[in-house]
Length: 135
Image (tube, rainbow, N blue to C red; front, side, top):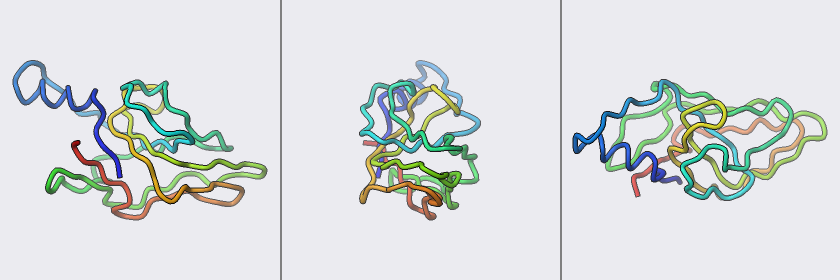
């Protein structure tokens, strides 16, 4: 589903090889994107939904399973606020970031099929619906 950004891969490599310490973010934020995400490492460069009440979904470590075979996935359902009247967005990708706004891009990927978000729709991902791999 998604892959690590260059930013995160570099932080992991520097940490493992003793070049610099990396402190994991307290929370990881899931963003719904209406355009493909390009690995620029910059959270300002993604195009997010703009429906009423939309905000990145804050996750905590308990929302994620432990990594197995180079992949990690969500351990709980991840739901966003319901879209309001007149709202409509087509979600084609997701991004994981280290801040509620802007921040560093940690991982990203496309979703298939596209998720159409309109009035009354609560975008959500079932357990295991978001998987991040190191590639």
